[in-house]
Image 1 (cartoon, rainbow, N blue to C red):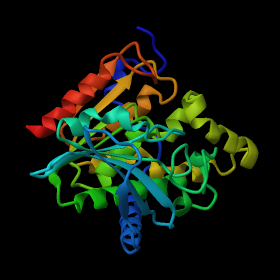
Image 2 (image 1 turned 90 degrees about the horizontal axis):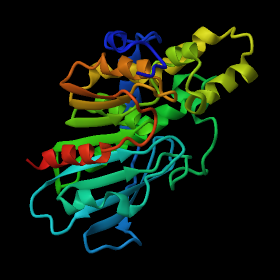
Image 3 (image 1 turned 135 degrees about the horizontal axis):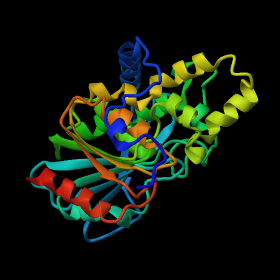
Length: 316
């Protein structure tokens, strides 16, 4: 079997090496309180995309800093009783994708929401994809980190969905690949109302391990560039990794309440397997790890059907 990381038997016991802040829970409680003190200013309008299969809407709201955040909302037609909801988050540098990509969910009786992450290639924020999102705010401390705001965007969307009268509050779940896989997990950790999480090769975990392995060229290149330009002698390395620890997914894992399904390819050179196992092995709730020995950070044969079957179980 190809190998880019630890042997599988060691991966199953690996819990990560990056620091965990002693005030992590307090930091995020204060962040959530700050978010909820500010008006969301939600607007929902009919989308230009039209289909006989479902109702399509443009949902917009404001993030903690006033940034406009855009979400595609697809609802089943003629809802009589509250329906389950899937909230999906996309990979780094992408967007929520085409409307037609997820029609199978509302067609099956499940509400579907897809959030464009701010300042990437969607309709959220003020800029098109801005390089350096991973390190934005890194010199200014954890409250200024880009991913603090992005995680809070996800929580605000959850708050909006949970307030909708036609949504089954016991069946709101999160889904995502890579960056989206990370956000889906963090959302479930920060909001215990999330009943299930499906996370595919999550990004943003165990930053020190990524650094030590010298992998993740695309996903973590910004971190390498940061040290080269701003700290070439690594005088502030300890502080940098301590700051990143406030957005490190492995540090959220133990607070997840909902049921988790995770997917990992053992030859993933973008988000190394050990960084993903560091998340999975710290999860205390009911969980399942689907492992693909010969796949990396890529489309995996048959996985979309597995996700769809997982979604259909929400209707039971």
